[in-house]
Length: 303
Ligand code: NCD
Image (tube, rainbow, N blue to C red; front, side):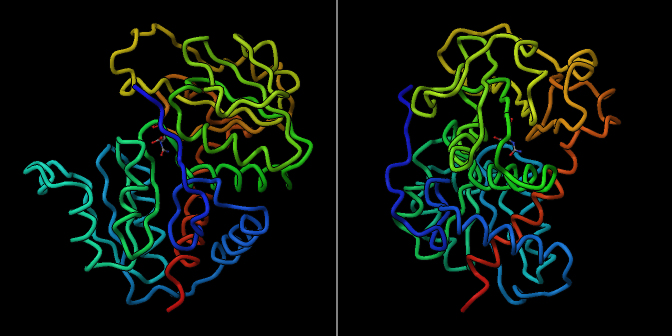
């Protein structure tokens, strides 16, 4: 399958969130400051507004996180999580679905298995579209919440040594996160088998590639682990690859390591590590709620 990369990044993110390429540092500062404010406030700036969650792929966290974010801000949500029961099964095009649904709502959160789906939706929509994952492409809102998590856990984003481990080829959260991290003074280490290495498009000359976590664990400040995206393997070789962060890895790691995972995990981090204060993946979910609240307010909070 050809890999599709977002083409048009000139689109302002307040009109539609397609790719992290649309964000500059001041935008990120603004979103994070808003997330800070909304995490403590009890305001309802989106009363009377609604979003539609249109999900063509499974989701627990992202759809419920947007749902919770919207309702906490006073707004409402039309969830279409089971497109199997919708007119999609009758052969409706994505474009027609979007043009129909936009009459009912102020913004649409879209997860789709095609990498060009968000841009197709944006090309016909007059309301903001938020990319909640476009195949093996990007997952910009997850990457923003990952970056926010790092900034909260480490009190800043510069001077960090970040190790990304797992399926770096198909992992859309990693694709978006690498691009955001490059805006800061961050060293990136990549740990994966060769078959699942980060596509050249996302690679930077200062990155180092490794096969074993042990090669970099002692120097790592942030360890970001992802699952093997089995559903994306299509016609490729079935890869028999499994890995797990172990207690002995944690013993070698820094005392202020931040262990992250976009979740769901399927064995990459054993539950025995949940009680380690360095395990930040459930705090990451909470930070995500605040970042999504901020994005919703920024996109549809003004008339
Ligand atoms: C991720 C995704 O959908 O890409 N999940 C999420 O949104 N937190 C990661 C994954 O599915 O592995």
